[in-house]
Amino acid sequence: MKHTSGLGGSRFSVPGGKRRDAGTPGGLRIRTRLALLYGTLFLAGGTVLLFVQYLAVNRILGDKGQVITSAPLSGASGYPGSDPASPLPSAAPTTYQPPAQTAVATVQAQVQARFVDFKGLVLDSLVGQSLITLGVLALVAAGLGWWTAGRSLARLHTVTSAARRISERNLHDRLALVGPDDEIKELGDTFDAMLGRLERAFAANRRFAANASHELRTPLALQRTSLEIPLAEGRVPDDLRPSIERSLRATDRSERLVGSLLMLAKGQQGPESYAEADLADLARAAVHTYRADAASAGIIVTTDLERAPTAGDPVLLEQVAANLV
Image (tube, rainbow, N blue to C red; front, side):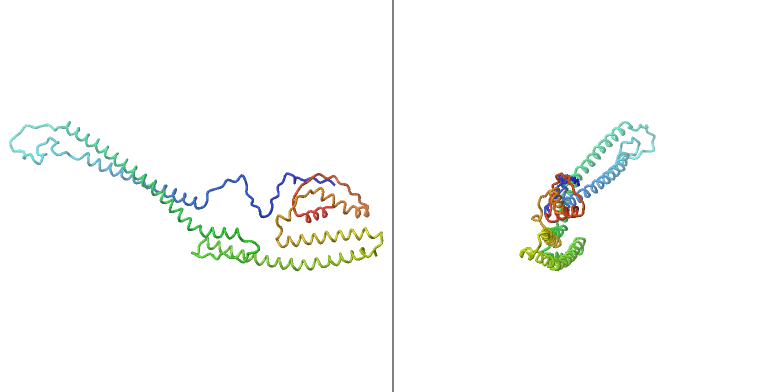
């Protein structure tokens, strides 16, 4: 049989190690994002308010300026009696004096020009001072957002720290968060409930492993003893000795397989249980083990194996190769 595998280019991570995607950029923390959000929202709202205020002041000054610049100037009309200090016209006929239209136009132009300058000065001062105030208040809003977010996320750090230190040996620990009944407390209570379910599941798993260890290993030990004693006493015919030895090797593999399965069931397999191996070598050993059985059944087994490196539990990998053969 020909076995090809792409395992040579694969990577196997060891349980317990940290896995991190190299192409994923690190983002801003939630506290920083909230502070920036508060500052940005305050700055946007202040900018809109400043724009509306600018339009309102510009309109108010425009209306008032039109009233101011169009008001009649005292004594500038040129008509008799227009000046309160001048005496009332007598009944005697007098010579008509034309109004000083040129002087009135000149004065009104000067007043209007000065008012336009005043209006521009007021609006420029309003915009400049408002922008400075808005910038300072935006920084204050960002600082308050940072402080508020820090207080709100403090209990979330408690949940994160607990999740990092929890293992099978301390599933009885609980967060028991205190404080307002908000989303973070709900998260802590949910985490405590999950720990309770995990604790019960691990306890049931340990009970199963203990029972299975006794129920599976005892028959295998009796089988090994019943095979080893006749061999040791020389009471096995020569033609049966190879079969008895194969049975002993099979029993030994079964005992090691049961041990590995129980270790896996207990969830205690760690980095020490992993080793580098070659699937081609494992398949070659499995074929050698069962070649005699295949020959007795009239089956001819040929192999065309290529190197296929991998990593894992040696016993379980041997069982995989044996199952394939």
